[in-house]
Image (cartoon, rainbow, N blue to C red; front, side, top):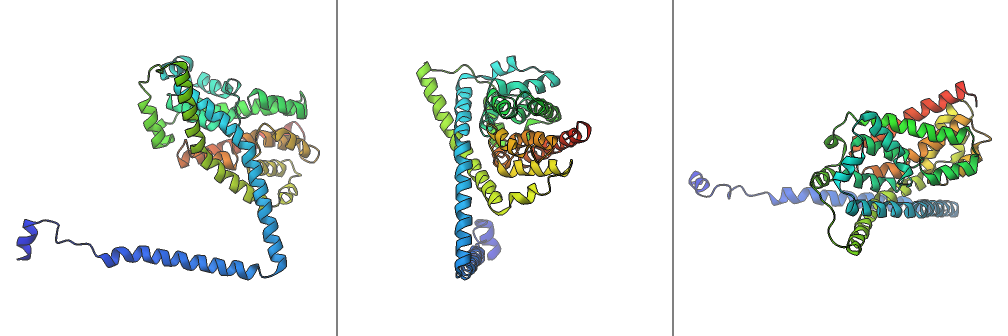
Length: 355
């Protein structure tokens, strides 16, 4: 009788087990509630003493102050980059990108490394611009080299570095090494395929824009559409900026800078100490030269150049913003490659050119 019913109505007799399906979510909720209860009990027992309460409140105030400082410093540049990306989306078509960008690998990487002179954006604003250019069919090598070099190779950062250090080796070393590292990394990504590097959603938008034409509508309508797109890009990238600023603020709150500065006296250790400090501080590239100037009397010149070169390329907040464009494995390459190249150049500077 059972086989007849199964043949007549296939699958209807295979009923789910409600107790098994609902038991796992219930256990998760109970486990989460117990964990929160344990953390709350620990917090209450810790805050019973006045000293502990003062320590926690002081640390929390420090965290909030650093977070707001980082976010307020970076948000205008992210907004500027988002506005540029919005206008690129509306006013730039793929045919224009194909005509302008050279096809030769070396020329393409050099073009990307020098695009910061045309799009003067810092490490926060360069990410949405790069993402939008990738949608328009920009080659991988050009986008990566632009992403690495633009935070340094732009008029604003060059002027601020000149104001801090003058026309000296630090200024030329920062610009030259940034272009060199961005060029090398661009050549490395010349061998990769876009579908292996870019996020799937970005690949879909890249394919959909492969046959785009000139924008429709009058100038006012196109400007309005550009600003709407800019707002969407700003909100989309702000989540990465907020998380990155929170992580950077937590690192600065609980990891004392004196611990990094105390080990930064040798020709090798000083380089890694300042590069780690640049990653943790996540200072905008438009003002980091004045911060590096404060270290110039206690750190080697190679360490200062490493700080000014690696920090704008990669820090905590920009690393998370990379996730809005690239796959996770690619983001790890974009962190390790500039770190290794900058360390080799900065350490070689200390050994061969002196401190």
